[in-house]
Image 1 (tube, rainbow, N blue to C red):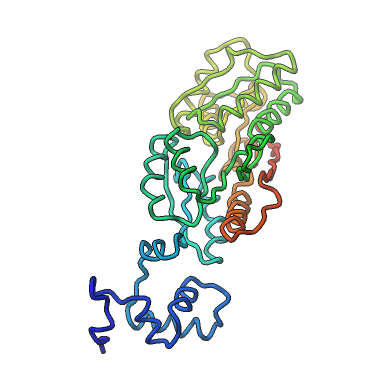
Image 2: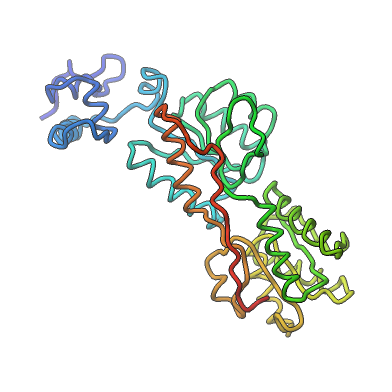
Length: 346
């Protein structure tokens, strides 16, 4: 049977939080807490509230909730791409932590564009998200102003803030991209390679930090050669990896190893090497970065840097919950490290 008309909001005809509270015989605050999954509500009472809301057809109004409480139960996470397994793994891990605490993800995709990220912030910040998770630190002046004005708790992903903190700590979970780039280069040097090329794509901040580590390692070995760097602004892909390998082969000078900034590039290069009859690693070693699915199954299996993206997502979500709940954060700059995976391609 439909509920009496007086139980619906006069303005919109919607069932309201108060309607659910009246029908369940509890306060609106208890209804709100039960529907958010907060543990302070007894399981039996929470189940009663949920059943009542379902029976009445109650649908929460996120805007009204945010306006009433000055915040919502939503967390905005902005990543560069959803076609990259790295960011999918990160989001999945963050979702598990936040969902268990009664929060829901809003996902924005910036396509590596500071302008698009600014548009996303302008669209979502008026919804008063409880917190933000943003990839890296490279953003527009407009975005920086929006973030400062909002005062919303924010955790940065994949990169670490410099050791010297500003007056207010900036929270980050990740690892040193530059150190990881240097570690891969040092591995190739240790294998006896001396003419090591670097192939980069997209050229976002993290790729450039890996390039910085590559340069530092070669400079320390006295083997730096800017002519061995091939950088493309195109999006990283298997097809681009094959193209970049062909450009390396045109360099001449006996290039004996190539460090690709991402595994998809390196995978494409390995496929191209097989097609061209180039023996890896006998004639040329190939290495990647991120340890993406399929890298261990390549022929030969790909040497790469394993990055802890799931752990980054989970730990960043945990840190954000601490900030949102007013709890102290022991390590505002959480370095989860990386490890080099040695396989047959090097």
